[in-house]
Length: 233
Image: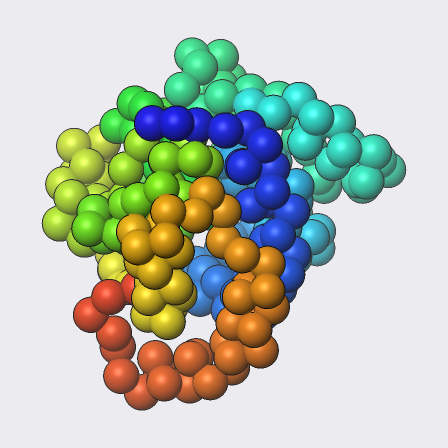
């Protein structure tokens, strides 16, 4: 895996070019979000900004620069707390005192070498009756140069994800693939063209098409997608 921190930073920054995708993802996960939320891998805060009105939002990320930026941004907002830590670190379990009813992680698990340990820690941090909400890159056959450059250890299929969740102590609630058009773009750029990051021009064009893709996928659940959306309890 030819990981590049610069490539990952570019992807995080270019994520702001596809704000309609983030809105789509939020609409999908919103029904499963409670009032006391742990976000694993909060990054630059794309999700936290939607959650400020909740009772408690705790974000963790191993990148100190991201955490410092979020602390400045949410200074004076007591319902938002952020910590520079790793979900696989033993000390992360101390956050269990917050009694989380939701653990959410968006496009993070694929960056963790020991993803089963990460899931087990998420299970320990989640109160009984709560939900784990995951978005991860879908389909092993989509894995290519862009995955390698931004530090993806893997992509996930439904069966593989379900098996890991059961091993971690979860019960599967639902799964579905999202964004079939995005999968096509990822295959072209990462498998055919050998790109290291998604081209910004393509992202801007795709952002304009998101409303159409959403309507189509509401009518016809696609058998493929760039992302796998999973809920467990």
